[in-house]
Structure formats: C-alpha cells, structure tokens
Image (cartoon, rainbow, N blue to C red; front, top):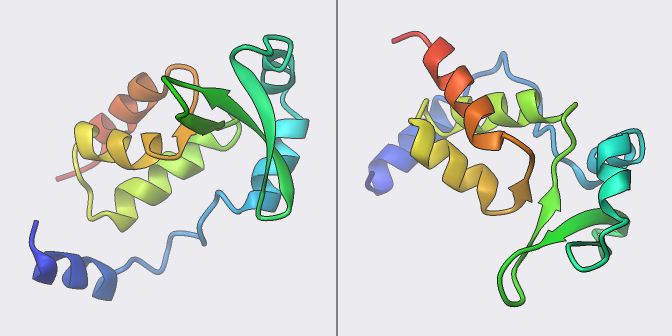
Length: 121
C-alpha cells in the first residue's frame, strides 16, 4: 500500500461506522464490567493496571518490556469492525496486526477471521 492508497482510504472513510470504539473511558468502563478481565489481575506476573490517558486500564505483559491493553469481549466486535472498515477492508493478517499492536484479547485471531469471512467482496 502506498501513500495514495492511504489518502484514498481516509477520503472514502465510511460514514455509517461509529466513532473509534476504543476510547480510554470506554475501555475502562468495559473492563470494569468484564469479570474475565478483572479476574486476569489475579496473575500479577501476567497482568497489571496502567494509567493511560488518565484512565486505569488492565494490561497484559508480553515479552520483555512489551505489553498490550486487554480488550474486553464486549468491545471486540466493534473494534474489529472499525479497524476492518477504516483500513479499507484488509485481510486477516493486516487487521490482526493493527488491533494487536495495542490490544490483546482471548481468541482475537478467530474473531477477526470470522468477521473477515463475513465481509462481502
């Protein structure tokens, strides 16, 4: 994808898709309502709370000093839809790379694959 493809994607941004669904406050509220996310904090070696944008968010440690924000199940469908549409309907690999750059969630690749398969030509 070159520079002109990116510009075209933003110029043709769909108006029928809501605003970015992963605002910090929205994430915080969804995490607080998700027992699985809250339960993950029991494993202190794996999960921790980090203040981001003034909001305390549950994050997961990866390798070294890398970490990702834990994406609650309730927000996964909207996050996948938003990224898929706003990136110009990319495939599984690119959609997962974009979401996975900041977020982690159980079965995220499978959820993305299901959405990509449902996408019309």
